[in-house]
Image (cartoon, rainbow, N blue to C red; front, side, top):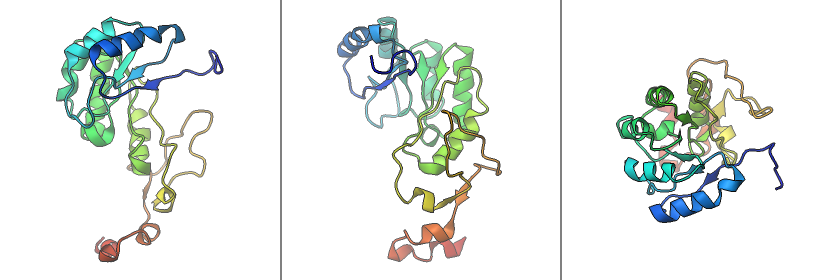
Length: 204
């Protein structure tokens, strides 16, 4: 009622729901026309998923079902995608095996009419750099990626290459530098090292 039709809302619901409870909840929120319900059935840090259970959930509701942040490698996404077990997938570049693996999964999902909304809230600013670059190359099934709004106070001290204001009008510009578009600042990071690691950057 507060946001109206101008702001789309998605819910991160899990993980750990039993299938019957997930179906009941997904049906109950159908009148709110949510963007998606996320990670209802997967367990914390379990590198596999049950496509059959997700497919039953997806077919039981008009609310789009999303999962993927805790799934490793393309092999664990194939059946999920090819059986249309979810409407949206959200692999994490740090968990799935890197940017190339995430891109393969996104393109495979595109071929099966499944949308893409990658995870990445806990990967810091280097993870943000990875998401900015890989998402700029994704096909038309890309919706958005999660932005790490709750950042550690030292994140910006150890990174160079990011503008002071990263998000403008819900968009992020491609970073102009090569690679991830940003890098670690050894001098900025040095003050956060433990005593036993004080010479860490001397080896670089």
